Amino acid sequence: MTHIGMTWATATIGWSGATSLLLAYLLLLGHRIAADGRVYLSLNFLGSAGLAVCTSAAHAWPSAAVNLIWLVIGAGPLVRAATRRHSRRPAAPARRLD
Image: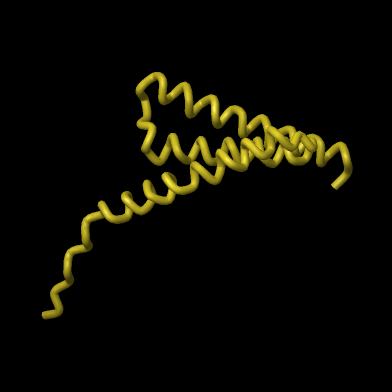
C-alpha cells in the first residue's frame, strides 16, 4: 500500500472511531441506549480501537495510550454484557425421541 493509501486508510479508521464514540455518547445522553448495554459498550470499544490505531500511526503517544487504556477498560464490561446475553437465552425445547 502506498503512503497516501495508508494515510487515507488510517484517517478513515480514526474518523470512524471518533464517529463511533460520539454516536455512543449522543445515544446515551438521549436515553436511547443504556450505559451497560451491548450497543453503547460496542460503539465505545470500536471507537477507542479506531482512535488508538490512528493516533498510534501518527505517533501521538499520549492520545494513543489513553485510547488503548479506554479500550482495555471497556473490554471487561463488553465481555460481561455478551455473557449476560448468552445466559438469558431460553433453553431449546427438548426433542421427543418417540
